[in-house]
Length: 469
Image (cartoon, rainbow, N blue to C red; front, top):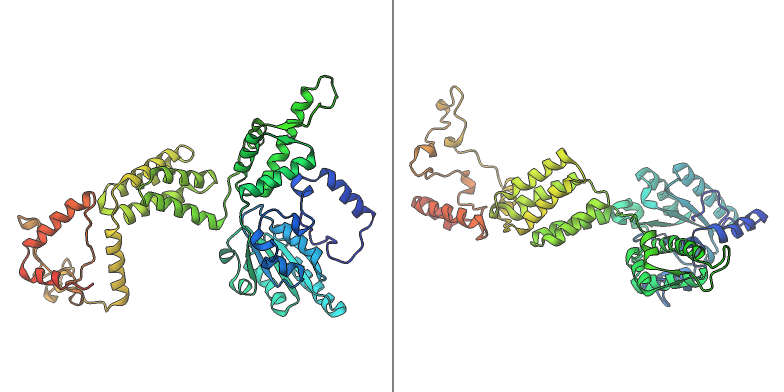
């Protein structure tokens, strides 16, 4: 219920009869979450670390000393509510925009009005911008001059991580206030307040289920409760003794009402949680927990995540975390990625689930990844030595005259399948990148590799013992 650019909120205009009539109508027709919106800081449920007695944000609000700020946190945690309460505690003009429908023109118009009010009345302006993360770079830059000049105090609200969503110059000029998801006890307090106001009762199982489904979101819990109330009210009317007769007791919300109200759950996550969820998936599979891996993948896909993104991460994990301990893991992950393209959701979830279970249960080794990163580091930081003459391309005419390929021994011509040779450039002789683990298939591969090295000449053996760390 954020006032738009044309709202009279904080404008200094007295309410007229139409304002009063609209306010009275909203008290009846507005959603439950809007009707229960706090009118005082003491009525805000949750965020005690910010708004409790002596808490920093409360002290700034009550003293009217808030500087430019960003309120960030999950949906339904009170960011917009606190910003609206700010209007009751400030002598400044309070203006509100929503980034959903405001553009650069609206921002510049607000800045012009703020400059006029500052010059003509000596009155500062607080500009509240809801969903500030929806503003692109150009739109955020339009705000920057007003903040830098002190024309406005910007208060932005966002569900996204501000370090991802906001420009660095704007972020550096703002204080960050993190709003936390409401705890179960806080949600229960909010629900019980709503039940008293609306004249309903609810059983303990229904309350517990409602709080559990809300996932810390006050708006979600009240929206679900409002639908459940409608279901309970309809049931109460249908069981009345006489048509139109009022029920003998308060309507009671049951767990069936809660389940009916939330039959279709809305799964969502923002940019920050996108990375948190994929991180949880990768770390669960790396930690050999197939159940956790399946759960986090389900969270991603149910929220609408692109299955190709999940598949790509699994292909990477197959080499980075399973590696040579199970050489078949990469093939399984790649096959799952191909299945996503061929089959599509929802059936492709089965292919991804198979890959998650296989990768989680597979023995783990990151030695191939460590070897690659070490080799990459040497290429980037060390002098680039020339390719040894015997390893150079000898397939074109005149290559032999240049000495290319001279002295190269073809391993397949040796009965052992390999030959004693030096393949690294001179500046990296003895450098060892790959150190195999003793896990899974890598153990057998490593034993064969070490046996092979042990059969080689003393020169290579000395190079091994003198390797660089």
